[in-house]
Image (cartoon, rainbow over all chains, first blue to last red; front, side, top):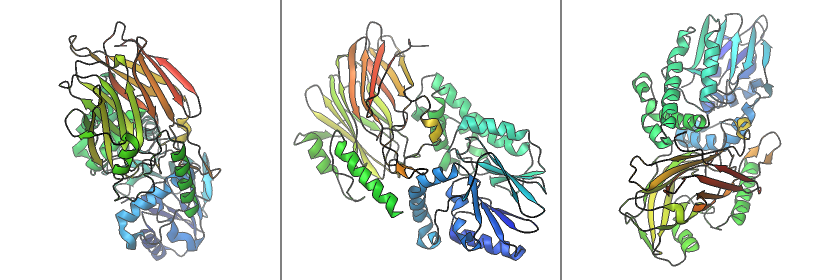
Length: 256
Length: 273
């Protein structure tokens, strides 16, 4: 399950990611309402994946501004049919109830600041990495950096963008200063730069193995059997996602 | 999204009507066996020897990424005949024909022959390799693959990067491990979206028109290795790995045509470089 967060200002509330269903999103909304009755003005999605956006519908009654990377709409809309079908099958009819695709009404390109009243969130769109629509959020009041799925901890990273782009971005992020970072999957808070290291090691292992295999004239199938397997014991859900990551990495790196 | 779905459906019908082989699979329900009809349309009443070991199909039983499923066809060294043609079929794809190759004099014999590519698989489907040997016999290997959403929901990880370098090609040759083996292998890669006309441009609400590689000709030292007709069931950035018979220079010339009429050509870099 993904991490969902909310930030409370003097005047309003911002939600950062809404979990994987309207049912879960609605429980998140209930949890927020036990803390504050201030209006939920912003629902921010760190990127397009269903486990971060499918709870969006639970906040419709708040009439919030839905906020995302300017490429989120294209990415999510083109995958909508498949995401809905897969999740309907995976969740079952009851848990699937209420899910709908809600695209950003505020598309961010570059940097954007949201004012919650005495507290602001700085949104920064990132180049293609985990996906082509990752956006980070900094809560300036607490110096907390929300990384979405640019940071996985415990749960094996999943590659749906560019492995080279992701490693380059992690390198930039590792030089950032922040009191804490929040991963998209894993504990609720971690510290830089150590938080990024396991993920950097995982992605770098894939890149180095895949590059060597390509140089040796090996095929994609060969790579899916061996590349990055030194990381197998370091992650949960490795068997579910790793081969897919290697496949995507191979298709990217073979053009170098 | 009924509007989107009906557009996709119309597009599927249109794509089918223009496909090289008009096959009637898309209306079929998931559980329906479409093969008898496909078989009739593609091969008529010709006998097909199934699983007789002349052709071996390797494909993962579960596709990790339905838009990029690696597929390899092998003809074991015990088969000594020349090869005439190879047809790759994914029963449940909107256009079930993936590729139809006809082999030329440079296809080679005297060792294991193989052909690999990467395909899109739209739903749980049988995948078939039908090989025609020189004597005119058809041999078939079949595998079942669990996959979903390779075609209708096919999408680029980074659509903006997709059209950069369109037509860029890499052509390589690999000598056999042993000099006594007369079979070399080659690799052809082309940067091409191979788009299937089933994606929606969300900015304009238009269907992105289909544009895919439809013809590939590979020659070794001027003689044909194979000529291939292909469809959008081949993944983005089409990738073909194949064997060919040893020649004097072992230099490959490749010509690729797409549905927009664009022609891309490339020559192999000397092996080992």
